[in-house]
Length: 235
Image 1 (tube, rainbow, N blue to C red):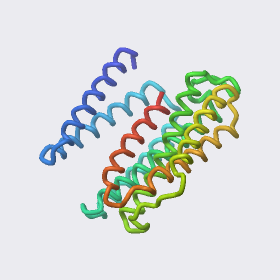
Image 2 (spheres, one colour; image 1 turned 180 degrees about the horizontal axis):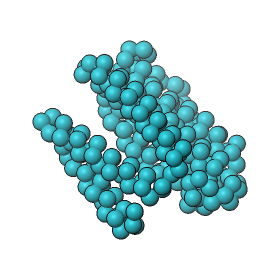
Image 3 (tube, one colour; image 1 turned 135 degrees about the vertical axis):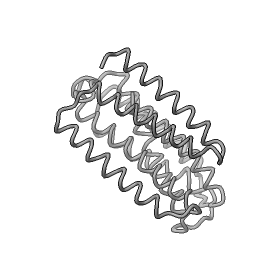
Image 4 (cartoon, rainbow, N blue to C red; image 1 turned 90 degrees about the horizontal axis):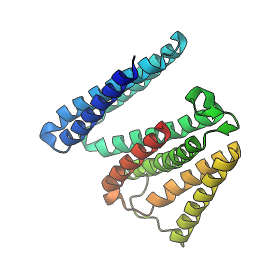
């Protein structure tokens, strides 16, 4: 596939994503919006595969992964009543965050496969994007799990107020920034997993002070986080 054709197809998929968001803004057009979103994602995936030209074995693994993930997602979604949609969305968002963490880890351990350099010599821009993607992804993962637990009644919906929580959160955020800078300088696997650990803790601490009644708003916020995580690691 030529570069120009790929750029055009990516543009088409981007337009379809924007149209999907417009359709999802109203109940009467939400079904059409979903269709536009699925079509756009299908075009983007097909274009990426055509550009990457994976081996037969690699393509087989991709197809198996899509079949397992898509089949499980469809099975779960069909069994969930509409009243439980917020819980379902929160649970699915947690998987997006986890995926961002795993992709970042794969890129760190095998950068050649991602075209971002070699072990010990990863491009600086890729390290920054990797750090942001894994941090936001880990926050999204644990934050979404807490939101799911509160919405589903598996955890008390009452706000959990820790003493000096703002100081703790600020300390963790500062620690994350320091570790991200350190990772870009050292490419240390230990620092990478420290970023993951701090981000997982921060995701919990951000969400537990919020009451169950506000969880739908939190889910929307986490939806944005999952998008940023995917965008960060996608570069």
